[in-house]
Structure formats: C-alpha cells, structure tokens
Image (cartoon, rainbow, N blue to C red):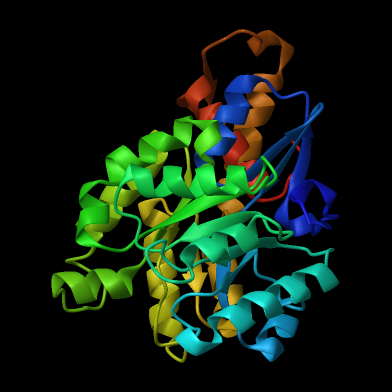
Length: 331
C-alpha cells in the first residue's frame, strides 16, 4: 500500500494545520525537525518528541503500539529480530500495517543493513508498506542513503516516503556533514538522523558516564550537521528504563542540545520525553507576545521592534512561530 493511499488520523496535540504561511516560515519549520508536509494551502507539522522502538517480531508489542501516545513508532527488523526470524517478522509487520491503516503517529521501519542477506528485501518490502520512512542502520557515507533511495524508487515507493539514517559508527560521525548535505536533495529522501549511542560506545571504546561528557562533542557534531542539512535529528536511547530520574535528566540535556526528540525502548518513557521536548508555559507565553507585537499594523514591515524593553527581530518571530507550532497552537 502506497503512503498516499493511507488514511492518517493525527491527534490534536501532535500537529496544527497552518494556512497562508510564506516559504520562509515553511523552511524554518522544516529545519525545526517536525514532520512537515505541504498540501495545497495547508502545512501539517508534527513533532517527533517520543520515538519508540518496537520489535517487529513481537505481535503483542505491535498491537500495543496502537494504543500509545508516542509521536513516532520505529518497527525494528534489525537488532531485535533473530536471523532465523527476520523473514517472518517482515511478513508479520506488513500484515499488521495493512490491517491498521489509520494511525495517530508516524510509522518508520528500521531495515537491516544493505550488505546483510535481508537488507535489500527489507527495503523492497518497506516500499510497499503504509509507512512514513525507512530507517537505515550504520550509515557511514552519502552513498548508503542514495542507494537506499534509489532502491525505493525502483520499487515505486511513494515520493513522500522518507529515508532516516542512524549515525552510530566512528566513520558515520566523521562523514556526518557530507551525509547531511543530502537533506537539500529531495530526490534522495533524507529526512532525519537518529543517534545510536550503544554502537558508538562499542566501536569507540567509550565508557558511558552520567551526563555523557565524552559523548557530547560527537552528539553536537551530529546536531549541527542535521541543522545544516535541514533535517530532523533524534537523540539516542536510554538503556535503563527503570531509572526515571536519569532518563528525565538525559531528555532535558538532549532538548537543551537541540535534538527534536528521543528514541525510546519502553512505553514508560513516552510521557517524560513528550514533556521534555515540548515548550514550557513561559516559552509559549513569550512566543505569543512576539507574534502579537509583529502582527500590529504599526509594525508591518519592521525588522526590529521593542518588547518589554528588549529589541526583538524578525529572527525572533521565526523562533516564536516554531515554538507555537511545536506546542500545537494555531498560527
């Protein structure tokens, strides 16, 4: 089933329909990292605060995912599925998606790497599924993304279907700038980076520490590259799902670093992630004030105005509109 045939029901808290916006704001929203679609005069923006991994081989988990409040679900055909179960998991996932075409969240499928016995078949199958994107593991060079996009094209995948890339190896981090540039080429489909901290730690020998002091420089490198490429970027998983305090602290850190959301391994992490990556009441109030002052007739065409004794530029208006969109407030 192609994506344009899929009926998607979006929850009010996850998006707003925005009419009459100029191309400048649309570009800002795309850079902000939510899911952005244009249809006629409407632009739909959906945040990606909480992105839950669900094993495709687990039928019970597939069904439970339909009831959760995550912004996105990544159905995993890679790490969580044993080699002997991969073909069956792929078929079960296709059946599940076909049986549930109306959903309130983005659906992504993490495929196996192209060099594995299952990678190409995974991408071919995803091209026919009612999903929003294919997530590629261990992306290390631009060609990895280009080849996957070409494979989707050959399988007549919907043009709206995206490619997400996991950055989780030393070579992937070193080449992240070159990979991110593909975000400016719509034909390549690149829409999002996903950090894989466990693989990074394993391949570099990095010892995980509270606060991630040794990982932060690489994380910021990935965030910066994503912004330069105009794509979304998601922080990696937090392994101890029972440590709610540690998880909340890492969510707060990720939001402060500029990530759009966080990948999750347990449904119990969804609520905290949604809170952490949503604007605060103070941020929303200030954003409203900025928008309102620029909307006054006397400020039409002005590049700078005064608000509460501070100079506010058009740049701040764009930032305010991003915050209001993320809060689900009609612009």
